[in-house]
Length: 428
Ligand code: GDP
Ligand code: IMO
Ligand code: MG
Image 1 (tube, protein in one colour):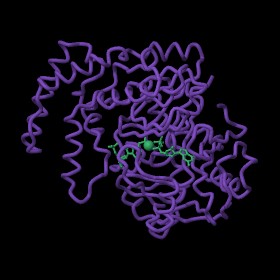
Image 2 (tube, rainbow, N blue to C red; image 1 turned 45 degrees about the horizontal axis):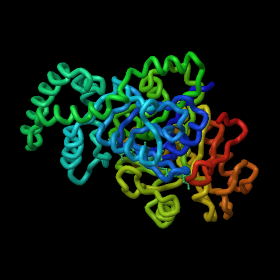
Image 3 (cartoon, rainbow, N blue to C red; image 1 turned 180 degrees about the vertical axis):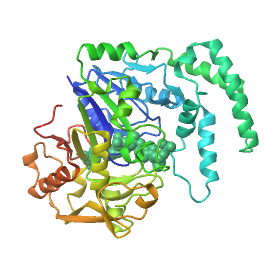
Image 4 (cartoon, rainbow, N blue to C red; image 1 turned 90 degrees about the vertical axis):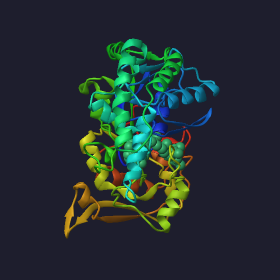
């Protein structure tokens, strides 16, 4: 049984939620391994449309155990409102949702710092989701973070909170000219969180080890995409966690060699929210058309997403650093009415042709070199086999495979759970 890492191949929002929801029909365990509620993973199934931010996208399959892994940062208020939402839709969570004790907690001061630093950047913000992501990972690295397991250790928690509130208050008063952090309010908040989260908090290590020993099917669900990875993305316009399959190993507690399949998720085009270079962005009617047809508005912030052609240079780079063994191409149906489609196959940089992702400043001035292919001008949503697709669509997909260097095993032809084609190599 494979352990599969689901990794975003672009700038995020590639359709990871849909892929996990689809594959989880066969999964025993689904683990979210990085990020926090900056994620917005959309799922459309028989229960409705859901935008999950922290819950693993396997939650709708009653037989799947769902783990929020140690690499995730958890805003308990956001998690609890998601738990309420899925429970209202008839999905039980107690006894199958597990929150690892090692995951770090997002507090209101993290969110305030994110907002204040974005404001301090004036006209050039990074365009974060303002969910406190970098401040909580900074505290984690700075070893002043407060973890989920601390909620169950009252004495230790009180000590930590007193120290952190004093340090943050000095920062807030002195640097931000902002009201201080109230230790009493933090403790009261933690008390409320503990009351409700107690049934979910655990050490997920034994559960994961048992699943590995029993050779169960495990899905590792990533947040964001390689181009926003802390090390390999367009720094500083990145997030603060590792979005690669390596992050899946550390963030879920699974040895790297046990990950047998790394499924990169891409869209048939590129989108990004937030600032930073995106070479294939189209600031024209075609970009607007992709946005409208693809309904490209942020699942977390509702911001319009920047849209453009498929960037083969960035996708190949992503495949190389994250080690994709397979590729899923979602939203093929968005091009059903296009006369022609384009793919970036290289960049022009200062008079040279390059085939890899350069330093961020240089990435901001590259010019994509495109290849144009004929469109198919036919509906694809009902297609369930590769041979159901028009020949032009298959040529387009074949070209993506060649450029990225990875076989395509899943093709998205609609937002619903069943709107997917599994090619021969797929192991659902
Ligand atoms: P994620 O963050 O990677 O999970 O992706 P998002 O949920 O933020 O964005 C993907 C959007 O595309 C969602 O609205 C999905 O419902 C939708 N979607 C996913 N796959 C397909 C597809 O193949 N076709 C269409 N039309 N929509 C899709
Ligand atoms: P999913 O998991 C798309 C972007 C933000 C910003 C940068 C840093 O749904 O693909 P952060 O709040 O993490 O400090 O923001 O990353 N960003 C996302 N873009 N999808 C996401 O998640 C994102 N999470 C963060 O817009 O540019
Ligand atoms: Mg998303």
